[in-house]
Image (cartoon, rainbow, N blue to C red):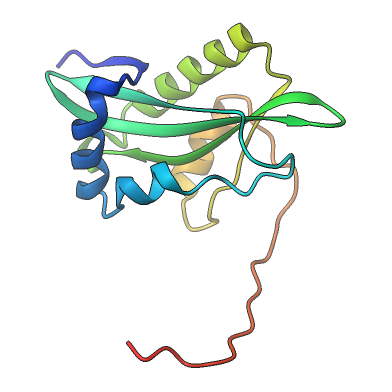
Length: 148
């Protein structure tokens, strides 16, 4: 099966919605909510997709912003691959495409935050030259129980 890895276009919107829906994610939420980046709101957002036939089989979102101390950096989010293709080199190909885009745009770094439960995805990043920068703990204090 031939898989094309490329930047998404406006024509891919319906296919992106269908792909993220299969992954249990509402695409509308991804496209309307901006990343909480250390450098503020992203200046540019794009999706990289992997397409087999007319079906998107992998996707990730890249937000580009300016860090005052580094310059332009990219933040990778919502990296998902169809279950049947997770054990292939597709994840590596996706990150190679992002690295090429980062070079073309003059980015100084690429960042991502990955749940420690996603050991498979962490391994893809590490094998693609990413290094663990630090670990974080997400803390929350609830004030009222949810009704539903």
